Image: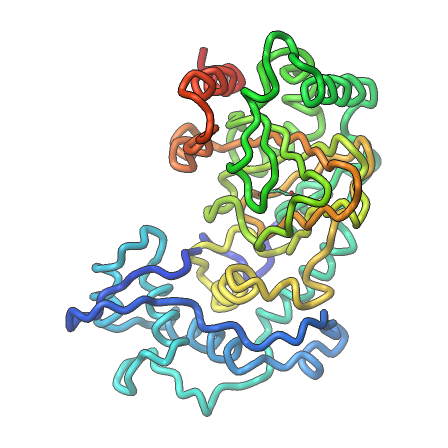
Length: 399
Ligand SMILES: O=C(O)CCC(=O)C(=O)O
């Protein structure tokens, strides 16, 4: 199934890159300041999306700048790109950031006059809103769904949830092993405190590097039957395992994460999440902004605008039909393109929320580029780091 029209092509960029002006004056290019947010979550009326959904001045300008910059950039953009310290900006990003910050002069071809900016959303942004609303309702599948349906939803939404995808007996064994590892003094010779990372995951989540022992290395877990073919198809390559950890949100301690993508490049990395406890709203589920994946260096103005405004600047969580919080039951498995914008919420309950995370990648080069294990167990000894890395390498099949 083709990707939505507004998202066709390759894909995004970074925030706050330093770009030097041709004249030699260094300026910091940042996304435009966020518009004042009154805290309320609003609803886009999809039946008449243009009427109630008026673009704020900044979104309108951003959208028109993206349009103008895709049509042509200027010598100053080129100069700035050359001296940019960000490895992720392309020429259009530089142009869009300059334009939407009012840094373009009237002589530049991609200059946009703010007073002429329309406040009605263009077709591409309406399509994005429709895509997100559809995915909000239709991204959970049971065993009756066909592989094609699930694949199409992953391509469209960037995230799917598979009901009962993990075999109950295996899940039970994994849950018991996790409980033993977490609370027992040792598990298969591994001490839990040696594997526990308190500063590797955003907003005070614990991350435990799992040892390559049963049941964590069980083939039924590392290649969940329905999931394996989904990953190969989506990545266009045999998926390689990058790492296997449990991310655990302690009650009362973990905070809401800033909305983020785990990586910026789409269709390169995939996360598979297996909740080890059923999740209530109070336990702080994961919030997803569907249809925000794979937008790096996008070739449409809508793609550029969605990435920057609804993703990087986090506006997707202001509109009720652009995001959802997924509350899994035991046996559910979530699969998402690591570039889709998401955030774990705060755990205000009294029980812990552990999620087993299997991260896959399309190639060895991409695995090295992400380098997820950099910064592993920073507060621990070199021996503890080497011990954990040995287990990571075993999961990767490196020795
Ligand atoms: O805590 C969660 O729900 C999600 C954590 C996560 O996906 C992340 O840190 O990227």
